[in-house]
Amino acid sequence: MPFEKLAGAAICAFARGVTGARALWTGCAPIVATRIYFGNHTSHGDFVLIWASLPATLRIRTRPVAGADYWDTTPLKRWLIHDVFRAVSINRVPVEGAPNAVDQMLGALDSDDSLILFPEGTRNTTDALLLPLKSGLFHLAEARPDVELIPVWIENLNRVMPKGEFIPVPLLCTVTFGAPVARVAGDSKEQFLERARDALIELCPPRE
Image (cartoon, rainbow, N blue to C red; front, side):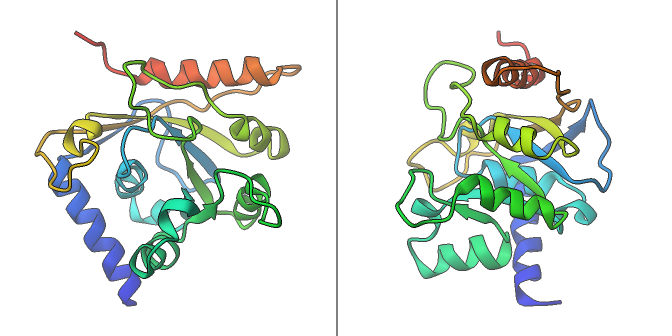
């Protein structure tokens, strides 16, 4: 087995072991299909936990979307994000002459890879359940209407890996995969993003 695959397997085992993560497929089945898994974003570990929660047959063809400004800064991070996770590395802030982020994601989908995407665009450190969703998800849905859009809610990871901490706090996490978000003819960008946001919030466990 190539070293990158061994590293990926070790990362998955570590992520599941530390978080005790349970994958709950409440609205769809873990089948081989081209999908966009879009989730809430509270920690740098979010995409790792979704990736690790997928069956191996899905994981090998699922690519996280990651910010180049964070992951392309050191040799180790570059190796992890490009060689282990096979991520689509994008510029979250447009840079003149750089590839268009939506075009990069469409290229991955056209290669029959699935994506893990966080449409809030940055980690949510507020008391709100979700930040406003960015327009990228809408543009992907418009350009590739045959791709399933699967909402994913991650619960408790921000408490396992608090911002600024390097040692995880043992705590059970859940990763809930919901029903695909349906497209409605004539939806405006705002209407679509509101429905996508509602689909995520519906997966959130009740707050005490």
